[in-house]
Amino acid sequence: VRSDPDLRRMNLSYEDAAKFLRDVLHWPDTKDFLPSLATLDALIVSMLERIPFHNLTLLTRERRPPTMDEIKQDMMSGIGGPCSVVNSFFATLLDVLGFGPNVYLLS
Image (cartoon, rainbow, N blue to C red; front, top):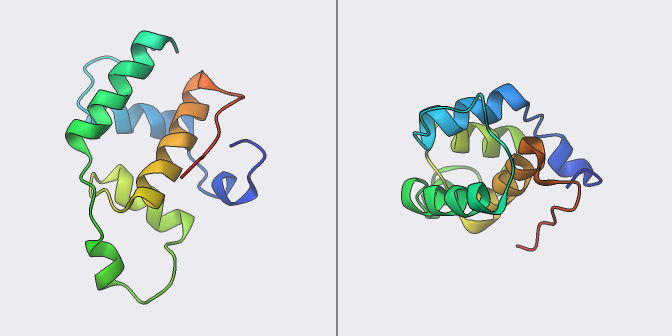
């Protein structure tokens, strides 16, 4: 993720990541967050439970891939999207939260 110039353009900060965990995934406390297998498992479950997979945004916007800003905005608001949107954001989120440097986007 860190070497991907497109994903770096998302400009997801640690503060953005903490806000996403609190406001969208409804994690009660993020100040003591530590990357571990248990937190990775919990993040995956939270993403599957709270972030909708859909292609509606592809039908309502002009025909082009979403920009990194649109991906960030859709995910930070909890709108979700198709796998390319959710997976791009999730890979970046994992890297920002300290699960890197070996986070790879395989979508």
